[in-house]
Length: 173
Image (tube, rainbow, N blue to C red; front, top):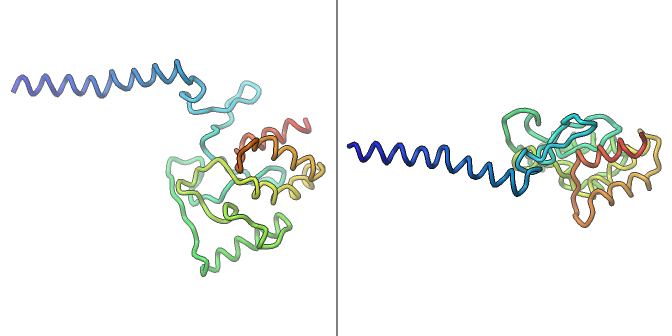
């Protein structure tokens, strides 16, 4: 019985204290920027994380993927509508009007949620769909907005919405 208690205490201390402490130490030493949650600072103030989507609704900003949950909450979920659901048609019409495009121009990530509802990225295609709206709202040329999208995406076919919106703010400040 005493041996079982000692083993339980030892394993609890090892798995509950020593192992997590070592992981934290290695994380802080090897990748300190990522160990803290990939937090983004602007003017010395934390404004978000590169890993968690934020709800942008202004016409002047790129909008992320739809989410079934409040993106600032602790819950996570995806919720995609069937093609036969009339609400999907309503969403599509709203996005078409907002971005002044036809339905064929809307990429999938404009209409469907990610598995978690917190995906911080959108496709370059979806960013380009939003370029006209943003250019008009910010009094920029579409070409300026496109160049910014291309620069932020780099070699990827996706772009981080928070980083892209920060770059937008810096471009005309």
